[in-house]
Amino acid sequence: MAPLGITPIVLQSRVAEDYEPNLQLLVEEQGVSLALGVGFMLENAVEAAAKRNPDKHFLLVDSPLLSAQGEPYTLPNVRTVVFREEEGCYLVGALAGLTTKTGRVGFVGGMEIPLVKRFEAGFRAGVAATNPKATVVSTYTGGFTHFALGKQVGQDLLTKGSDVLFAAAGVDGLGAIQAVKEARDEGKAVYVIGVDSDPSHLAPKAVLSAVVKRVDLVVYEAVKDQVQGRFQGGNLSLGLQEGGITYAPVRLDFPGKDAALARMEELKAKIISGEIKVPTHPDQLRPANLANGKP
Image (cartoon, rainbow, N blue to C red; front, side):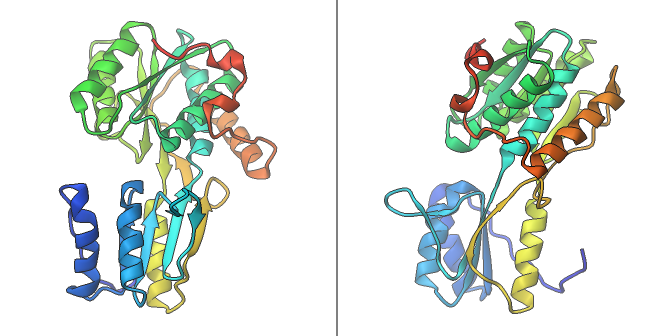
């Protein structure tokens, strides 16, 4: 990516009530022409700030603008970007299915919201594609900020036989990664898969891969458009085909690794071509793949 010659201004919000005031501070006092909000929890704040400042541009990552009826809509000065995370989850689910030796894998989710349900649906479908006899055990922590709870859930799944965990729960997910790291340090053949970014640096001997959202690419393209005077609002949906979703390099060795990676690439090509339609909710899966709601 070529340098764009801009100086970013970053404001850290301590609580949700800070979102809208911070966005207003950026455009009013700091004079930015493009303000970025990353995370679905900023949807209301970005919407309010954009309506208050129609001459400024805004980027909202991970959520569309929603009407009072909950329907997506657009504003001319707001670009929203969502990701088809389920496509990447399908691929790492396929990897989990090919890696597990116990035939039991775990899903650690945070809040039971549509975004995380997409993660679960894609993951389950991917496991079923490569290992239809495997059992997927899903557990939701109810939030995204409790490391200890995530670690406890991870430990419970491992104790009950899961040897591959998919952690999609924010800070709770980091706790699950820690649980797998400690089990791995004890000599157990267990693995963990991350989400959003590659957590290999946290547990290099335990992290198998991760679903990676190219937020960096989204931000770069928005800033470039702003700098070049061609920023436009609207809704974007990015997946494997657009390069908005990928998976982290599989650095660990395991039996059948080369064949597993080849299978993942084969499935990736089929998703991009439309041959495989990845489900976006567990309810869309066949009952045989849903016989396992709790550990």
